[in-house]
Amino acid sequence: MKIKVQARRLCREFNVKNDRGGKDTLSVLDSFDLDILEGEFFSILGPSGCGKSTFLNILAGLDDFDRGEILVDQEPLKKRSFDRGMVFQSYALLPWRTVLENLEVGLEIRNINRRGRREIARHYLEMVGLSNFANQYPHQLSGGMRQRVAIARVLAYRPNLLLMDEPFAALDAQTRELMQIELLRIWEADKKTIIFVTHSIDEAILLSDRVAIMTARTGRIKEIIDIDIPRPRTEEIRGSIDFARIRQNAWGLLKEEVQKVNALLPGGLMTA
Amino acid sequence: MNFLRASAANLNDIFTRGMGLFLFLILWEAAPRLGWVRQTFMSPPSAVFRAIYLLAYRGELFRHFAISLQRIMLGLLLSVAVGVVFGLFIGYFRGVERRLDLLFQAFRQMSAFALFPVFILLFGLSELSKTIIIFWASLWPVLLNTSNGVKNVDKVLIQSAKSMGASRAFIFRRIILPAAAPEIFTGVRLGGGCCVMAVVAAEMIGANSGLGYLVLYSQETFNIPEMYAGIICLAILGLGLNYALYSMELFFTSWKQEIRIGE
Image (cartoon, rainbow over all chains, first blue to last red; front, side):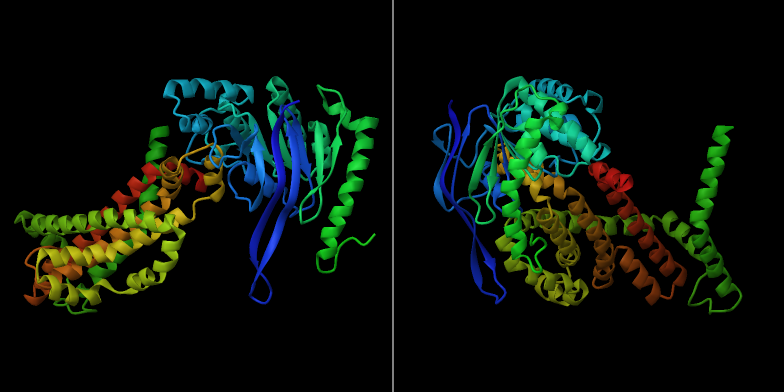
């Protein structure tokens, strides 16, 4: 299978102030290697601060890296590109635009004419089941609906790499489960490459072809788990033995890393 | 019936809101008439309104009003043009903002009235020095609000546009400008208020027209009802300008208002 994204010896450092007022270098990613396949649903799990969002931001062209290289479709990563789409935890909808106008943003950037934009936007709005809300403003919608608008907005300009940074983290538990199934349904339709960052093991297993577990800072890939549960998947698989087995394995790997993070905190939480 | 009830509610609303003003007018009318204060120094509103009527009848009121309004509009237009352009620039470039912020905060605190003698020295007792004092007074709220508005644009909105491949020009025009618009309009409205104050000072020195001139001249010639007439007209001018700017703000930032009500 073709490799979509290839990260080699990637390093990212930040300058931070230390307690004595001097400057320290905080290494967030160090010798980070990762291959992601074309058409794959790939999730990244890791303890807080491990650099998974940093990696996503670099891929989206929102952050720089200090050393190493990233290839997308065998070419060096471009800072500005029309082929990527990012979905944020906080939706990032423009509050002064209606739902339909929000869907048009990416198309406007691509200089698609007004009529074409309208047509495409309506199509994708229907895809996420929000046709009746075309002329509402974002603040009039619930969190789940806002995130559906944000996803439709990205899909509308047909990027071939989707980046999702904890897109469902701000939603309530029930809405979150519904959104996961909805995302699966949308993804099954054209199987674009998705890189999905999350804190939820269940979410990662339900959605992904492969799940990467990252180490505590400095972030590296600790292990990649193949999720060999057949597709199309439904909610029922949450209760299956396979799911439980994978979950157990993933949590075992992740737990060590979370404990490392907590041990660094004053009065560390877990000592078991 | 519905119509009647609605207009009754309206009437009730007007009565409630106008209560303070109404009681104040009664008190003002009573004080000089009952001899609590000397009528020579405080004309009752009935005399003041008569003076307003006579001034309007002679055409003087319109002349003073128009020239004051013209000076305000000229100063405000200038400060909006300069303040918005520089404010956008300063807010957009973080480094520039850090270097200039202290200077601008100091300028903002520097009273336009204190600087008026300086402007007179430099530009004489001309329309130019009047325009400049009004410009100065209203520039800072416009400029600082604009740069604040740009600075406070939600970062994730910019990141989102960037991830879609937006150019710098697109981000500036379609994200930053509309996101900062509410604060820019607030700045313009504050600036408008400053203009009304500054125009009075400008017209009290070396002017022969305008409402500020009318107030001072009436006082000097001991035409006390006309002095109060000028003061009231200034208040009306200020109210009207504020209302006009506020309506403009509502029109351009209606989405923001709804959020305020909705949340």
